[in-house]
Picture 1 (cartoon, rainbow over the protein chains, first blue to last red):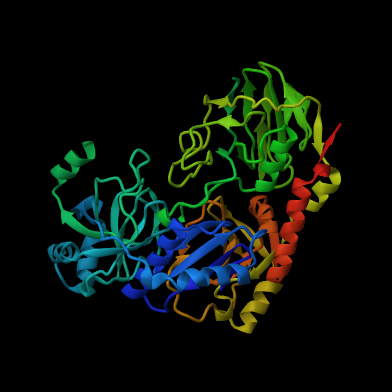
Picture 2 (cartoon, each protein chain N blue to C red):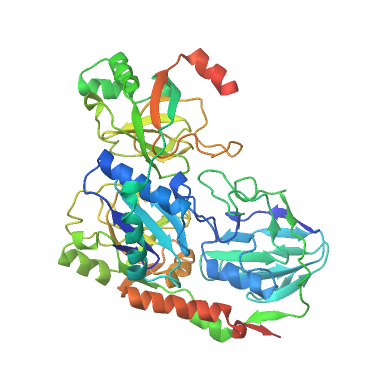
Length: 221
Length: 316
């Protein structure tokens, strides 16, 4: 379906499912390994892929026909084994100003929130919003909380937040409406690292609780 | 190699080229000149490749001292530029002598003015582009807006530099003049908005708020009745997408946009009018006009033909 005069959206599902996510990744992988001339950018999301193209070169209908050939080959695309990434997080206090509120909302202790948040293995559905911001799911049901009614104007880099059934880490100081549970000393996006972003689509992520002293130590590293 | 010292940076001055495409999977939006046409024409006036890095100034221009001889052009909005006190008309090439000072003031027309220099502004490219991405502090000059005292290197000339004074054809300029009626194509959630909401969107006049920057422009005016009907899952967003926030008011996503988002999009500004968005100032009043995808493409092709035509640049 056309999204603008220079982009179109491919929807795989009307619901967030692992199957749809894998189809998004497979198409992304195929388009990255065998690029279509005149396609300028790709934006994967939960169950869709936005394809930006040179409008002078392509019409929507013609590009759609071309992309359907790719879609027909998805079943043959193999995805690599997911990478496992651990992210150390110092929970609560000034690093996690919403931890107490989240705990109170669900009638559980802050300790229980941390236990639940660190118990799950999360899937990187996609990166979006800002460079290196990974949408991670799913959050354990016990922690599902709506985003803040009024977003914060400044969320510090490294802040770990939750919103709905998602969780994620803010790579940069930006505005943001997710409820903040803690902060990681690890850089999510660095220009001096191969691949730049710590996380990539399809990775599996676990959060590991650390103490303040470790946070300070790792920040210096 | 020449250099330019920033004596005063102006309100918000950044190094921009035509942006970095292809990094959507990492969440990196292209950034790049907000009025790409102005940057491209500025570069053509001085014999650069059209995507050479230049300076983008916003609402209030800066003051710059040239350490070496240089050929420059100013395009986009008229910021009342002077060179050692003498007025410099925009959309024209000029020779600058070592030690001369170029001073720009507040805008006399739209939001942005471009300073292009022969050889381009030399910065370390990030992901293949010189464009500053302000939100993440990446690209451009140290990933940030210019400050007093910054010294910018000017790239070496590639040997094709030409002599003479060149100007943009007035006829082309009137064709490319920024519009206040933005033409749009239907957005991907267009059908989520009931008829009265659509009618209201195209009939209303909206005013650009103070919250208008390279990431997006928040508009004020009558809220769209009813809003969108549907459950939105975050998806990729296009440059120039017009999304309707919970308040019922539109936001136009722009060059430093978030790459994905969860608001319904009623429309999308056509490619041929994106440069007009780059020239919108707070308090400007705008309207939206619906066109077909075929019309949008026709307008873009016409614009590109004009931009690449020999008649665009005249020797004077």
